[in-house]
Image (tube, rainbow, N blue to C red):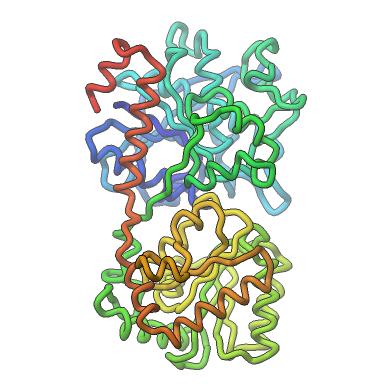
Length: 509
């Protein structure tokens, strides 16, 4: 199959979250199984800073935008690490040469609708001029979600008769339903389509333009980043207003767990650690890593004090309305625990953590910002990793924690529910336990789950050893996830076309 991935983020070129990790790795793993893959993304400033080699292609285009403006652009090219998958960059400095991808300290860029409509239209032009026909397009999140509707509506492009077939199969991946790309109706003009196409079957949503809704109703399949999240977004609690539409789609909505890069996240070879280890040596070597991290963070060095780690965004979605009360209680009562925190986000949370750390330097170390090396060391050194998210489409830190022998305390939601098996009588008997679930979403339940985990850690040592080692042996590499994507792509192509029309694409599989 010839598969094109449309995204605004891909490691090492641009990243704000997990989308970049997915699009920086999945196409390469799919290509390794024998398929042709390519990535199309905007030429953000960060691609120049990435240090990856860039070359000019012979592709350029001029697109008519509102106000009788003709906006030109060119296409640059590089490759994902490894060199097998080309990455095409839509280069238009007016839209993409900015300090950040989506906004600044004042909020989202005011012209985001026009920026990403332009990107979608430019990506259409790139796909029309690829060396071989496109068998399937995978869109990612709202910024690329207009593509299925644009394909269906395409009559001619910026280069005359060149067009994508209207029955080109499409898959839309939703990495977080809360971000939908909702804009006023007048932004539809930038699509270049006649206003009679602004209707509820595609672009229109409650009088406005909603990129994600458009993709959901026009894509051939919608895929989320975990099976549980695929079910949750069909409910009013997690559907963000789109649950009735998602429920109506039936089995055209599914979920595939993200993988992790097991070359980068490997405690046996990780260059950021004080001492490398594996499933056979973790008991002593994790203690050595803990002592090194305690010294680095200015915490008292004591391998017997439980170290609780947290890495990620400081936002309510990640459960900080539960975490902060528990931390305050531990600090107030001088509980025998230490906390190592790395992240940034809500200024109020940042300020409180900084203040708590300054007042309690023996128990709490908070690094406001991000450090990839420190993230690795916290994963390797902690006894527990806490992720009480309100919702979590997939989550990656719990997968890193499993790999590094750090036991997770999580809410039973989304990808956390799919990847962490709660420790209870049944899972202990069946040898399946890999972590601990909260019984409810409140601070008392988080404190109870942490307490239960520490009880097992100190008083049920053989069970704890089994939990740690079972987690370390879990395979969350991209291989398993990529094979599920390939199966989904082939099925989507088969359902879209008649057997005779899809035979060539399926034969190439």
